[in-house]
Length: 119
Image (cartoon, rainbow, N blue to C red; front, side, top):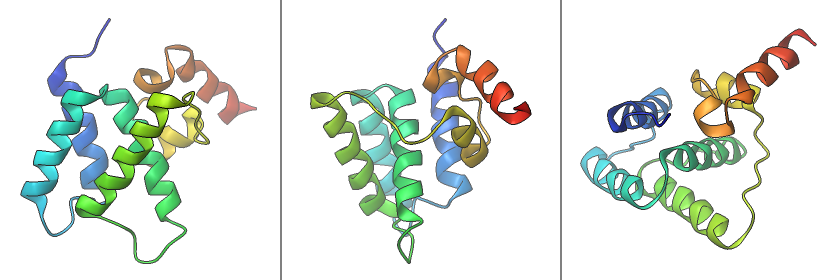
């Protein structure tokens, strides 16, 4: 069952707000994020955002705003021509975002996350 569009948008907003990713131009950021959301599935945008966020932790200061979205967009475009592979596990995704990883990794992700936590 597909998630309603407003829930998908809430999930993206949650990631953005949790890490203050909109930067100094929030209106421009929201406009660009809305455009990305019409071009790509929300689950892929979530995954790309988390991967870019993790990569960003290796640099100081953390890239935010339109520059952050440019990195997200580059990751999404790379996945158009290459297989989608991620270095982020469902458990890591849930820990970083506080969100259920199932919409991104599939329904078995919730069970996998529980097995990893107890294992």
